[in-house]
Image 1: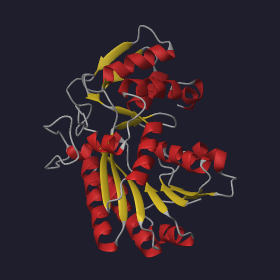
Image 2 (image 1 turned 135 degrees about the horizontal axis):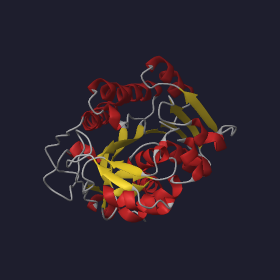
Image 3 (image 1 turned 30 degrees about the vertical axis):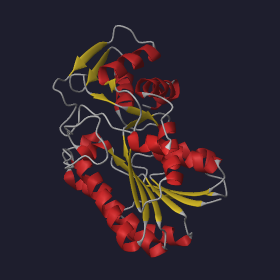
Image 4 (image 1 turned 90 degrees about the vertical axis):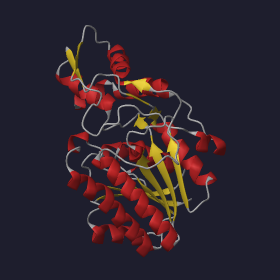
Amino acid sequence: MSKILVTGGAGFIGSNMVNHFMSAGHQVTAIDNLSLGRKEFLNKWLNNPNFKFFKEDLLNYKKIKKIFIVDHYDLVVHLAANSEITTYNNPEINLKLGTLATYNVLEAMRVAGIKKMLFSSSSVVYGEAKLRPTPEDYGPLLPISFYGANKLACEGLISSYCHIFSFQAWIFRFANVVGKNGTHGVIVDFIKKLRKNSQELEILGDGEQCKPYLHVDDCIKGMLFTLNKAKEPVNYFNLTTTGRTKVKEIAQILLKEMGLKNVKLNYTGGQQGWPGDVSQVELASEKLKKLGFKAELDSTAAVKRAVKELAVKELLEQY
């Protein structure tokens, strides 16, 4: 049994991570300010003596420091982040909810004597990479969004803490993660729009945006597999899957699953869905393959499973 702290624990990936650790018999603490996360995702565990939940903001350093100190955690899984694309033009939000929040987590770990961290970075740190598939040693890293800039800054902070304070970190540059408990992203966005108007669907950009989509189950398996296999002070990997899927294909998969016909597709136009969107992404996965990990579902299969998990009456009624 290990003691594990998950930031963003009521969010999309966080709630799935909590479910995994609790099901495996560990003691888990989740921190979430519930701005995007939902406490109901954790209902199964709220009365379990091995689980603690704190509604707290990572920007409140004094309070989170106390949480970190109370239990000597073996591992921090830092998943809290600002994932709302509507804030693409707000550098302050991304700085605070990304870089400064990560600094607070690292400082709380240092004071509490916690040495190990899993961190959710993103493929957006590469910016519009000229080399595809893009390997982990690609450079220079020139993100084109504030979200990407903050993730890259977080990677730098984490690396510094590893070298100066003898931390050990596993940094994952995610593909687009989809699946159960999704709170954001293209599938959830489409469902919200269709909930309001099932006759029309707005698609940002030209629909040709093409990226790898990783199912959240494979995401968690990949992170924990790497935790047990990679032993450097700073371990960094692309966490992706095989294949890519276009946004317009995702729309068609969703419409078919929901049984909607003759829906008018309205494209906003342009190669990007929004300013800062990296429209074409393909990640090299040789580093993880050499360790022995490969995602079970390819990109389109991950989208199809996620659509089945998300496009249900309960979710539609919620929106």
